[in-house]
Image (tube, rainbow, N blue to C red; front, side, top):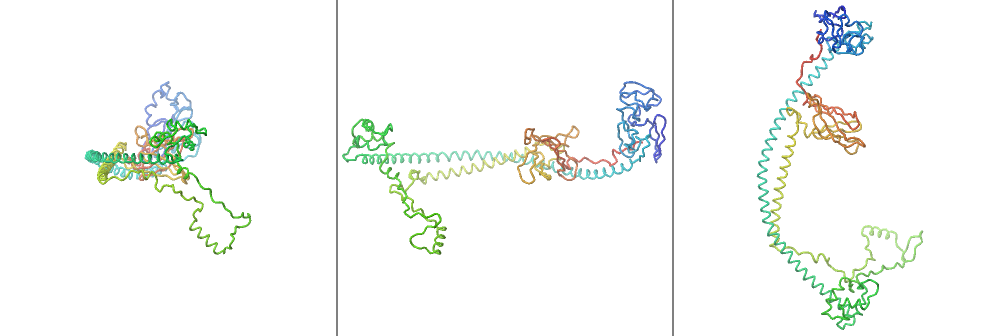
Length: 528
């Protein structure tokens, strides 16, 4: 491209195709050409003042906004427009004009510095187009995948809606079945309850008779034990032999105290002993109880003491082989403790609780119990099946309640998890659920946030996910994670970082955000 520079920096550039660049002051973008008319006074773009046009680009700042010096470094707040034909136009601060450093790829910012600059716009444009072409290919494939995701999401949505309708219909039938089985159960449980209560009452009556007989026998035994002289009476003196009956526990059972226990009499016979028995039975210790409480001292070991440095030997010599064999036998068959006391004759053969256990139900009652249990099992099974259906309905309704994008393109991410291992941690992203971090070599998992909402800008809402209310940091806020979505053919976590304390960021590629591709040349500058 050859260029001729005219007065006030207005340039005419002719390309190899003989196209003529629109005349405008140096540093002015084509979009603002109408404000710079050579034959009219120039009004500062902020409207602050109007100056003659020949003071535009005269290297003196007249406008507060610097708009009169778009092609010089006179205004500290000015900006210079790089046309960059063949690449992307851009603005640079006016302070960089003629500073000896090439900032514009078309070299126009160094028109009077003597710097040796080369126009690299075409090469940069070529590289940019190659990059855009690759991105366009990815976007194209990703967009095709997105269309498949949308089709599949729509199909799944319809299937789930149909499944809910079917399950709700089945649920009504199952609910009716549960109520019917409940009635059957209650009907079967009534005779069962009556039979069991009757059995229990009969047993309690029997226990009362047995207990009364035991109490009567115990009282008779006590009378015989207390009647030391066998004269048919229990006297005050005889009662005083049992110090455990001392009412005030002062170590002496006085005559007066004994008389009170005997109902105010000096002695009682068997017929009147019953009232006295009520007074003493809680403390009375029978001879049998006293005997069983006594424990024989262990047998003494009469063997002579053995010096600390010598093993013990019995009177008869013991062959070493026999001794070893005995040791082996002792290891396999431990000898029972010979000092264990022999049970006394008063030790009961049966546990008292076993003796008082309720006897088995009779055949008729057991039949009623079995029948009632069958109805309970049937009812429980039907109720469990109903709960499972309710859980399934709630699960599907919860899934359908999520915002999976305008066309449901993010549906496939639901119930999936994606991991990114680093040198220290394994990061795990479960879209629409939570983000977590776990030490790579063992340790507990940390919640980096639970699903919150879409958090992109108004025109790109579905490009950012927000996960909130994670595990609290020590003396800090709860952890949270922002996930930036990037177009890609694959669904993977690309990177993770913690730019601020307890605030994490992730980059996540997915075809669900791929847009319909545009021409690779779109956005490259073709203006002359």
